[in-house]
Amino acid sequence: MSREQAVHGPAAVPHRRLRLLRAPAHVLQPTVLATSYRHRDFWTRRLLAAADTAALMAAVLVSQPFGKDANVADHLLWGVLAVPIWLVLFHAYGLYERDAKRVSHGTVDDIPWVFHAVLVGVLVLWVFYKFVAGHQLVLAEIVVLGSFVFFGTLLLRFTVRGVATRVLRGERVLLVGEDPMTDVLVRKMRAHPEYGLEPIGVVTSSGRAGTSSLPVLGRLDDLPDAVALHRADRIVVSPTGLDEDDQLAILHRCRELSLKVGLLPHVFDVMGPSVAVDDLEGVTLLGINPPLLSRSARFMKRALDVVGSTVLLLVTAPVLLVTAIAIKLDSRGPVFFKQRRIGKDGRPFMLLKFRTMCEDAERQVEELFKFSTDPDWLHLENDPRLTRIGRFLRLGSLDELPQLWNVLRGEMSLVGPRPLVEDEDQRVDGWARTRLELTPGITGSWQVLGRTTIPFEEMVKLDYLYVANWSLWNDIRLMLRTLPVVLKRSGAN
Image (cartoon, rainbow, N blue to C red; front, side):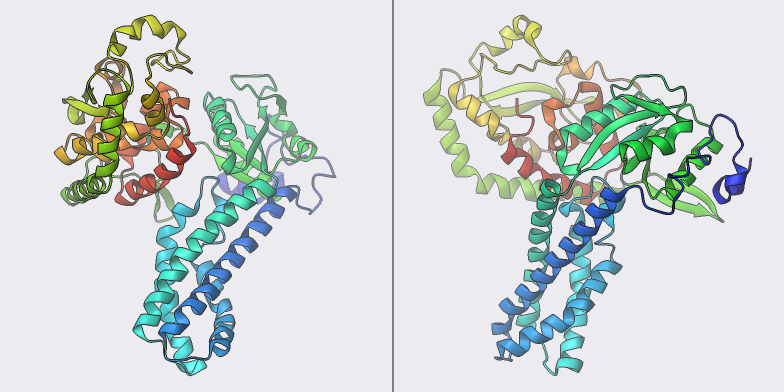
């Protein structure tokens, strides 16, 4: 069967293993089955628009004293009339649609788009006020307006998304196919309620339970019934065990049922957020980052490390001093803990941290390993080796502040793969050794996404994807996401 037949017509799908188009009459009605996600997206878009409107009006009000026009009422009135222009501009930048397209989209991801939209928006407002309102915005007014609307938009969008996650019902997710990644996806959905995803079951070609821990809700033939009966809002399709015609038929049926669809690629290990969709005369290609970072990219990353570590060392100097004194008064032993780690290209270095344990902590590792909740590294719910001040430092990740010196020396980076000890590094081989092409970091994907709650093998894969899809914006994004994780103490050991 051709691709065109699978996509364009019910009669083109053969009556064999996949009979998705022969659904019961109640399923084929021209109504939207996925009502909850339409309800969720409906209110999320409007809440975001309300947040953007509030940010604009507040910016207009705050910037008014910096202009020549002293009439606050007229200034606000023209600001209200400019709201439709502002919302149309934000819509053109996709700032109301990305939440529906991606499950992991957050306010940090909005920053580059909001920044660019605000620059254009301020220019449009200058033209609008000059030629329509008869009031020319002066430089000081423009700077205050642009700055306030940028930060106000991000703050209100962050608040709105938090409220929406708590108030609106999450999307019910039905997984299709049999793939070892199913359990990983389910665990991630349950560990991150901010995504608003609720896995409800799996549909397989055989109708029997595979590797997934979810209940089996039927065979592929029963997909429309399973969607209607269990009120699914989103489908995640694994191509394992499905040929091309089956996959196209599933996508066609999901489109008819107004379902959101996520497709798990076969080449998961080399995919990532920086993959670009390209085409050559209508043939789709996936563009992946070059295998090596350019000189300019390495220079920008190193410049960010030097500037960032220098500033942070100066800002946190009082904290470093107070912490050192507290450690010395709390228990016997040195202030700093040094440990041999494996760095870029396999070169070892001495990682620096504040000491959080008793002096003989390293000698107790083998004895305590039998109590570890993770078979790959020592992870104890209540580590008896921790000192009183050490427990406090671990919860706030303050013990890692001395690593800023490692960053300044070039042994570490602000953002990068997790620095492993030698025993752990020896267990990483094959394609995963690519993680050593970049300098290890204080923070990174592993730290942001859960730290000790993430298994060793998955941590290695996250590091590989970070290296394969590196970008300066991704480094900045991970740094911005680190602070909330530290404040919430997510995955702290």
